[in-house]
Every structure is written in C-alpha cells, then in structure tokens.
Amino acid sequence: MRTLRSPGGCAWDREQTLASLRPFVLEEAYEVVDAIDRGDLAGLEEEIGDLVLEAVFLAQVAHEQDAFEIRDALDAVCAKLVRRHPHVFGDGDGAASPLTAADVKRQWEAIKADERAAAGRPPSALGEIPESLPALLRACRIGKRAATVGFDWTAPGEVEAKVDEELGELRAARAEGSPRDVEEELGDVLFAVANLARHLDVDPEAALRAANRKFSARFRTLEQRFRDRGVALRDASPAEMDAEWRRIKDRE
Image (tube, rainbow, N blue to C red; front, side, top):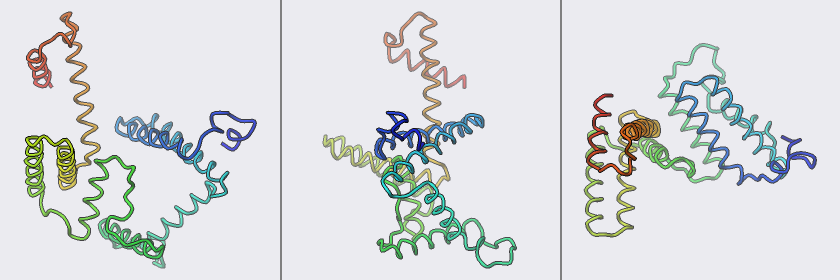
C-alpha cells in the first residue's frame, strides 16, 4: 500500500482519502457477511482479505498524516482485549474462568464504562453506538443497551403490544395527512419491531435479509411464469399477479 500511494504508484490510490474510502469499507464488510450467509468459505477467505486491505489502506492514509500506523491500531486492540478480559489475562492460576458468558458481558460493559469515565466522556448506558450502523441494527443495539439498566419490556408480548400501539399512531398520522408525522410514527414502528426481534432473540438485519432474498426469489419466479405465457409482467393485472404469487407461495 505504501508503494501504491507513492509518487511512482497508482494515481487512483494516491487520490483516496479517509472519507473517500468509507463506502469501500462498508461494501467489503457486507461482502464478508454475504459470504458467511451463503456458507461460502472460499469466498469468505477472499472477502476477509479485501476487508483487511481496507484497514491497511486507512492506516496508511493516517500514517501519511502523522497520526498512527497499522501496528499502532493492532497494538491498541490487543491491549484492549487483555484489559477487558481480566478473567483470562489476570493473575489467575491458569484454571478455567468460573464466569459465564453473561457474566463476561456484564464485566466487559463495566470496564468500557470505566474507560469512558477515565477519558472524560460522560457515562451513558448507550455508550458509543456508531451512527453509521444500519438503522435497524442500531435500533436493536440501543434497546439492548437500555435494557442493561432495566429500561426495557419484560416479555415479547409487551413489545408486540407496543408495535400495535405504534401502528395505531401511524394510522392516525396518515388520517391527519401530515407527512412529517407519518415519517416519525413509521420510525417508531420500525424501532418497536427491531426491539421485538431482540426479545425474540432474532437478528433483525439477518431476518430482513432473509425476507429480501425470499421476496426476490419469488418475484423472479413470478416474472418467469408470465414470460412462459408470453406476457410481460407489466401487462398482467394486479389480480393475475396476486393469484400467481399465491400459487408460488403454496408450492413452497
């Protein structure tokens, strides 16, 4: 990467900045997730390499700004892992830790809170949830963090009732005809649904990706069936499409 960024290197690589690399980092991370979802280990090997390359690229740009090098970032994360795993790297006798996974998670969050306080950042149960996370995932993370201090529903049924409540408020906003209120109430519905997923122990992003794949597969089948009849989908009536869609679902 130093060679690519050098005067004798690549013009495109030399032009990149931290901001310009941002979309590539997200893209490569999603391609890693896609390979995992497909169970494609050969693809995963390649995608991990691409993701690590983006990390090296970012670190090189930062190094050129006299900020840090890739080794500094790796040293920092190693130090953090040791610091946040005192039950493993502490002064124990080498025996297996008696802490459960839940205990470890609580300890991790407590150590993070201490680190934030030491750095002069205001303490918050919400911590530092990145704004750049996909909104559905961030909603789930926010709810999970709030739950650590007891601010949460006690059972999935209560969250379902909240979803119903928010849907009612959305219908009322639609009846009033205020686009701003509709947007706000729809956001509340989605936030409640994300937290329902959390209470059902379902990853909302994974669930929505699966729904997207299912819809896409059915829609392509729908297109093919009408093509087989010599009919373009745009020329079919809504009733015809709905009937065929139901047949596709029934065959699944």
